[in-house]
Length: 128
Image (cartoon, rainbow, N blue to C red):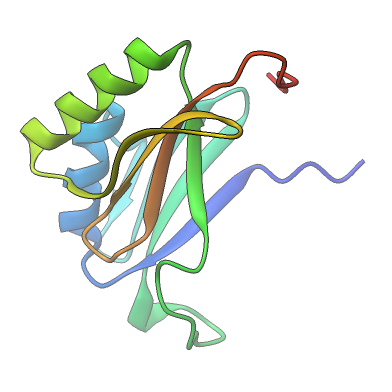
């Protein structure tokens, strides 16, 4: 079975993005060079930050066309993470709100990549 394990985000400044993600993830990258940084997310998943100008083949897509979503335990945890991210200066694109799938908010990284935090609505299937 094909099991995707690494999400790659193309960034303008690896060092600045690594500092940003270190703040919101609460952990340092396990690997970092001028052109790449790698964060382990647990359960075999990883987040890679790749210097946009170095990507081969080159990319034309812009940030914001997809989201990195992170599930938390409950609506209170959503609010706590929102407050923590605001304190870190994260750009908030959507304040906490309850939608069909659960309680959620959306932030953005320095390149405009969307970061959604949510707790599942009652009755939603857990995939973790």
